[in-house]
Image (cartoon, rainbow, N blue to C red; front, side, top):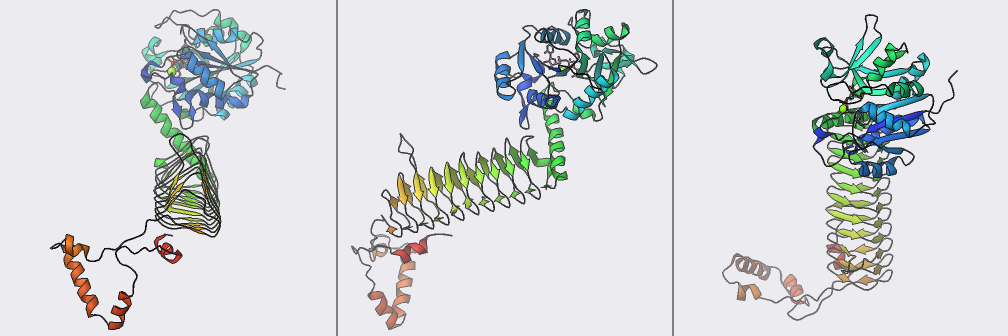
Length: 511
Ligand code: UD1
Ligand code: MG
């Protein structure tokens, strides 16, 4: 029967990570949706420890601030000087005098560690009643890592750091992953006996195994099934390698749930994103943060979605979205930019070179080309013509524009907020709208058109334009008398005012 215990997790995160060559503490570097530290804490979370202690040192303030966001229940403990992993654990345990039973210790720089592996380590450790159990792995290249030294019977004898190892020990490829389970009472006892008699003059946590073993306490090795889980991160080349491994793991998991990923090598899905069944993710796509892609949606190629929700069967093509919502069956792009609180209802369309911010685009409404939609509410089935600008900013404040259901806004229109275009209203192309347009009305602010007859012949004589105009006029004179008579009847002369009626504006809008 499992014994009741207060389980404790200690994460070691005080080191500088010198080889990262970074102002950012190593454990705060991001990796597909979480920091290195965030990944480690996530792997430990299912243990449901009573206490989680994080040893901080280098960049302590930033690490503490991050912890308060991602794991407010964790206790940061300061290790002012990095005197070794044994010293770090000793300080951590001082903060949890009540701890009993099992303590799990995890290096803060092993982000690919899986929760199942930590759970299996703890189960093996508690099952065997060991004083200490180390997670080990057989790796192709053990350079720089502590080696697992076993006796002739295969029992753990000691863990030796590479720099303290004999040539024979260096040849071993079974390494210490930096993840352990200990009986806390026996760990405390052994930590009190650590020496600094090694190449770095540090207190090594790993020496606890030799100490306990030679005192006759049972020490054990638990071998990880997948050695990639134990890979640490010491420089940015390793970080990039871990990123690829995690990408492949995440992509494989989504494909197994029924998601199509057309080019897994160029698809980067944060561990925090979700993709539903039969979604298709085309190449060169990033799904970041809390992004959700709905069933049968098609996303990509060349799409970045950050904290964005894409509804079922929507399509997003060559676009960038942050904090946006794309409704079911909606269509985005190519080349759209959705900014925070852009909300597209069902079957809405936001097309090419369109930017949308803090706006609702109603069900079935269309903003097909070259527009800016800021601080707007666009009703269902409205059509916003090409190059419409929702002028939301007066230099001091932002204002909202409302376009009613099934309204029709002609091309190259400025809607100068605050303003409302009523349901079913039309706005003539090229208008600058500053007053509300009532439902069903046509709003038009265009300057009257003047045609100055014969201007090209007078002012641009001898040009290709003048020659073309002359040919056209000769052709027209040669045409039937009836047609000529009709053309004379046109009220288009210098100084004559004409206003485009609905039939004319309809011509100039786009679909
Ligand atoms: C350590 C192990 C090594 C193992 C390797 C796995 C020891 C002595 N060696 O070596 O056997 O193969 O991890 O990656 O433990 N830290 C502190 N305070 C300190 C020193 C370190 O918090 O005073 C933290 C670091 O931030 C890091 C972790 O402990 O997260 C491991 O430290 P690191 O210096 O990377 O140890 P390694 O040399 O990699
Ligand atoms: Mg390390």
